[in-house]
Length: 259
Picture 1 (cartoon, one colour):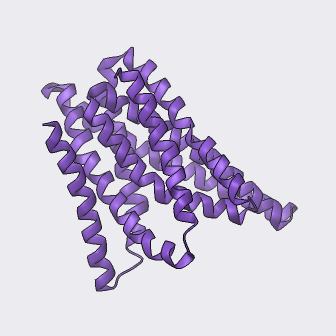
Picture 2 (cartoon, one colour):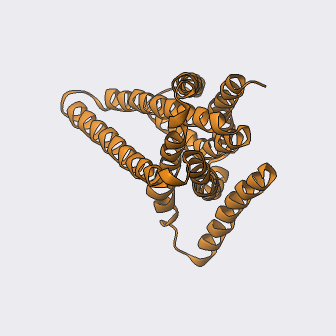
């Protein structure tokens, strides 16, 4: 399989499959969804942390060479700052839009606008994921697979959240599924752009991997882990640790098969 074919296949799988699996999850009874969501978030946390720290960062440092490890660290730090600013912008835009709509339109229009805003944000996010998957495949086929699977693990609970927002905005289940799938296809476009841009400048691939690691680390540390801290009882904490460990163990096993 060529590198481009692998990028197209796995960006399609990570995007569309995560949306379809989330749709199946959404059709479960509310009680089952509520019980399963913390385990899914914990598992995603483990896979993201392990993929970033045990796969992407080591490959970035190895690809850059011993004399450019510092530059990889700079790219990692810049990536974290970039995603912090991007999230700040999206939060500001969301709050600003809500304030305007509350003053001038009915509640129905505000909810509908929040649904479309969610789709735009998700499309941009999926596009970036596609670029990151392309960077991983340009480095190593197995690294690309591990990265795509880690992104898929993180996307499933996020897609469930997107469905909840869209249904709240008045979308039917069928319409919500259609727009979520269409939004996920931007990952394929991101993969194409990443393959074309990074393939023409392979010396930048290690730094793209560092930015990819920054993305996964930021999502895990700034989004997923704080949500896990909302449950502080001993049993819930123990279950979270187990599922985080399962996620880390899966990535470690995949990496051991590579090496």
